[in-house]
Image 1: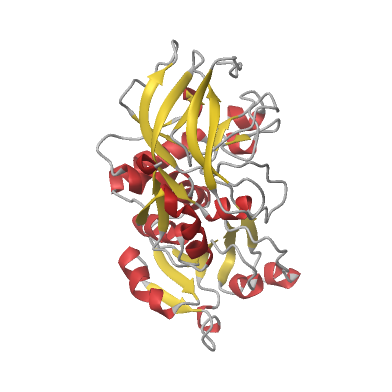
Image 2 (image 1 turned 30 degrees about the vertical axis):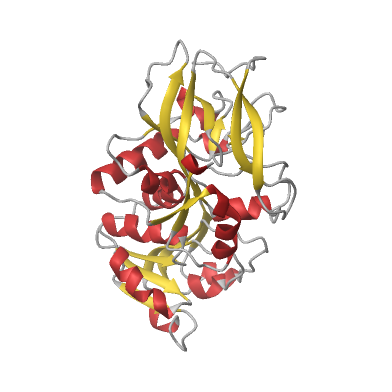
Length: 357
């Protein structure tokens, strides 16, 4: 077992964008990362997706954010240097970093490659600390990142890196529950919300052979939903729209990160169906017990995936040619992108071109 890294006194100067304090506009930021240890990989970041979580964190809407914050956990780039004992990567390789950069490596969850649920400490890619519980982590809105090779993902060559970057969060966040609840051909899957997460849920569920229905308040998204692979489209604000879908679905992936009616969604599940929450509303969502009792239904949650499953997802998407639909922006437009994202004005993921730093 490879031990966690130690932290040396030699540092690498890095450029990035940070949120200096809660709800403040992001601004250019110079900071330092550790130099390479024997098991580390230095990645020149080429693209980083903008996740809705970045907005929640930068505005401290979930609480406990740490500042100054360099957001970004959908990182795709190229290996620049490797430590003396690195075996899985060489300079010039494509590489990715997702939502965490380390964990204890010894607890039961880490040993099962469920590092996102580490019992000791998951070192998230930003707004967190390294395993020493002191060194702050800074994310992918930056020029370089140093990560242990065991927490670095291999991106197959010749893929469009700008479309791969969002897979490191939006992709694995939706792939993991589809795999965990064993979605397969012929099953009926609902996807609530057609944004960054939702459009990946549609693509992945359709690629698995499921019959997909998109739930949305926006009628103008119907054509997009069909192009992405959905067979059906439900406008949730229309009279009786949800009643018509009663007891229809095996699994529903709920990507909405705002308050909404969970009981109505539970009513569209078949007996023993599962509603999986992957969107994170800042506000509590009430649930009536009988919405679960009548039909032995499950209300569940899912958080990204471990390193092994994330690598599986990347390889699957490369094989099936399932990538994110993106709008590439220069770093100077990050604040504009945040405002557009909160209004749902993106199809379907902003991705920062880090060459523009």
